[in-house]
Image (cartoon, rainbow, N blue to C red; front, side, top):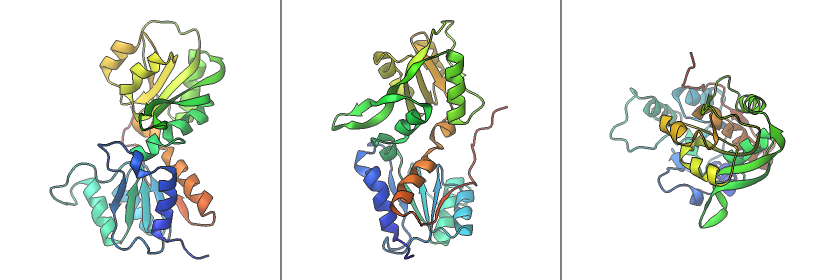
Length: 267
């Protein structure tokens, strides 16, 4: 089989999640292009974060393209030094001629993006965008949907743990007794800013990460807030990328990183 070019792999990702729908503050797109995009892609390594270990894994697996969710380059660099993990990853990628592309908020905003996939994994029906973009309401951040029937709080939290593959959750404790959870909103990554949207949409619960203490204080009486952790809410992006590329190139080498791990340890 003839190997597809680098650009052909990126084109199928951008057909699913165009760069044009990324947030204004974001750096979705190319992070590193050491040579022509027309060069053959020998394999693609998929990850949430580009770390030195992921770059080493790509080299050992014969992959010359890394596709990540989080951008490797986000804040301006004033120097490049091996003392910082992201810069060390960049140096190693340059040394080995590895291309790096990130599809951050473009994938978040896509109609079948990260939050939508999490909603389907939870078993939600009639999934709609929680915070639609004005220019295209079919895109946007977060989703809201319903279960077939209301779940008890315990059963709901058990399902969240199973889907997000975590043993620990931060959950609002307002003293209120929740009769049932049926209408659920969620946003992958840092989504506490959309708690008011979830309340306005009459959701029983809202799942996100990076929730501030005062969000629990201010909104915990109005909605069941569930914080899964950032890594847990976005590690599914590897599977999303894999499905996108494999559908177009079913016999192509697509690898989901096994080297990366949650940088947060629970004790």
